[in-house]
Length: 340
Ligand code: NAD
Ligand code: TYD
Figure (tube, rainbow, N blue to C red):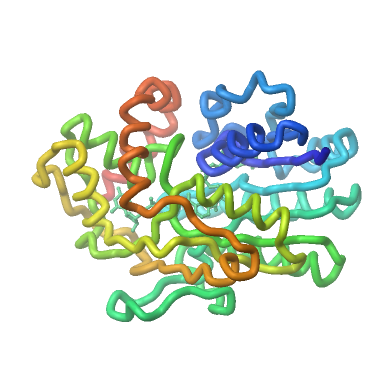
C-alpha cells in the first residue's frame, strides 16, 4: 500500500489523475491538496469524494506550515505536483502569482519531501518550457535535450520549477522525475482554454475568438493518456530523469476549431479572428520516443478518436460547466477579450 499526495487535484489534469488512480489502485491511498483557485472545483472531484482511499485537504502549496504538518501526519510515499497557475493569457495579465505558486510552491513541497522522506517527487511540467518551433519545419520536434527557451511568464515559471526540481536532485539527492506534456484536452477542462471554450461558445452560437490568423500549431493529447504516462513514470521512471509526453497530434488552431464546429453542426461563420496573444508560440511538437521505448508507454487516443468523446462529455455535463463558472472567471473573460 502506497500513500500519494496529489496537489492541484481539483483542476483539469490533477482531477482526471485522481479519478484514474483512485479507481485503478484501490489498495493505495490518495490525498488531494488544492487551494481551490478559480480553476479548482470540488465538482470535479465529486465522483470520487466518497471513495475510502481518497481524501481532500483545502490548502495552498505555498503554505509551509500546512504542507509540513500534512507530510508529518500522512508520511507520503509519492508526491505528484499538478498544482499550478496554468493559463498563458492570465500570466500575461499578472505574472507574479505564477512565480509564487509554480516556483515557490514547488520549493515548499520539495523541502517537505527532504524533511520527511519520500520514494519519489514527480513534477508535472509542460512542453512550453522548450519555447516554440517554426511553422515551416515539420521535421523538428522537442526532445528532452532541447534547450529551455521560454516565451511567456507561465512557461518561464514552469521552467524555473523544473530547474529547481533537478537542482534538488543533484544537490540534496531528492528522488525526482519530471514529465513535460503537450496540450491536453478531455473531461473537466476549464472553459477558458481553447477546446472547451470553442465547444461552449459554439453551443451558444457565439463568435469563436481565434488569435491572429489561427495558424499556430498545438500537439493535442487526451488527458487520459497524460494520466497513464505519469502513472507509468511513477512506477518505472528513473530518478533524475525528464520524460516528454505526446502522441504526434499536431493541429493548427483553425483545424481544431473547424473540427469542433463540424461535429456540432455549427457554421464556420462563427469564427472571429481577434488580436494575437503577445509572444504567441508558433508551434509545439513533442518527440515522445524516450517514454515509449524506455518505459513502454503508448497513448490510447489520437486527436480524431479523442475529440468526439470530449465534445460529447461537454454536452452531457453542462451542469458541471454551469456550476464551476465563478464571478472571477467572468471578470477575466471580459478583460481578456476586451483587449482585442
Ligand atoms: P488547472 O488550472 O486546470 O488546475 C490547477 C489546479 O491547481 C487547480 O485545481 C487549482 O485550484 C490548483 N492550484 C493553483 N494554485 C494552487 C496553490 N498555490 N496551491 C494548491 N493548489 C493550487 O491546470 P491544468 O491544466 O490541469 O494543469 C495542471 C498541471 O499540468 C500544471 O502544472 C500544468 O503546467 C501542467 N500541464 C498542463 C497542460 C494542459 O494542456 N492543460 C499540458 C502540460 C502540462
Ligand atoms: P490554450 O488553450 O490557452 O493553451 P496554450 O496557450 O497553453 O497552448 O490555447 C491553445 C491555442 O489556442 C493557443 O495557440 C492560443 C489559441 N487560442 C485562441 O486562438 N483563442 C482563444 O480564445 C484561446 C483561449 C486560445
